[in-house]
Amino acid sequence: MGRKLERLKVILREYGSVAIAFSGGTDSTFLLKVAHDVLGENAIAITAHSSVSPEWEYSETVQFTKKLGIKHIVIDINITDIEGFRKNPENRCYFCKKEIFSRIQKAARDHGISNVADGSNVDDLDDYRPGMLALRELGVFSPLREAGFTKKEVREVSKEMGLPTWDKPAFACLASRIPYGDEITKEKLKMIEQAEEYLFSLGFRQLRVRHHRDVARIEVAPEDRRRFFDEAFMDMVSTRFKEIGYKYTALDLAGYRMGSLNESILRKDSDSD
Image (cartoon, rainbow, N blue to C red; front, top):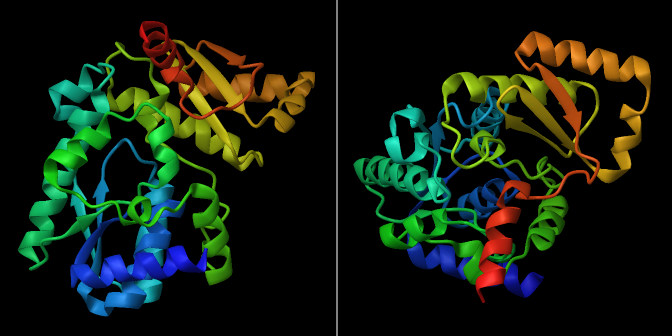
């Protein structure tokens, strides 16, 4: 692990200066902290502020950079204006990443920095991620992946460094809750954000609310599923979800798993091999 951390520092030092695409998640927080330690004021953070990320996570990016004294640039993006993204094809992430990182690169150049890096790690290669193609086309660096860091290792080193995000649950963009082919709108994203924020307030940590039009499909960690088998609790959640706008609320009995809406794509690819 120590060898990988030293390798990461060498990679960052070779950049000379770098802008970190900062979402506030475990990976980008760790990368930003190491970059700041290595490069000082030559490492800055750039955050894309849009409706696909919850406001509470955006607030965390502001608090973290302010605490460490890191220069933080915020770009407001109306993400649903991107037609290729809004129509929600299977490669929607490509259109989103292309737009966001093009804007991040421009902001970085405006501040005299030519290198942009994201927080992708080795494990990200295991899921369906068309957004990675956009990053390659734009020449965005992924130093965590280059240094060989897995998600588990990022968490372990983050804990050693005292970072508050070391055990933060993975939190993909809100659009990942909407099945491919269903149009992405600000209204749907707001419903998802409110529903997930409510479940967070009840003490759930690893969760997703999948948006199937008028049905909310709740995924929680397998060990948390039993909490729903209480009539009063079910009624309480159902009532709140109806207030948010869902007609029906369902619990996914399989529990949370990363990229569950990608399962049909991965099966299709496997069948064609």
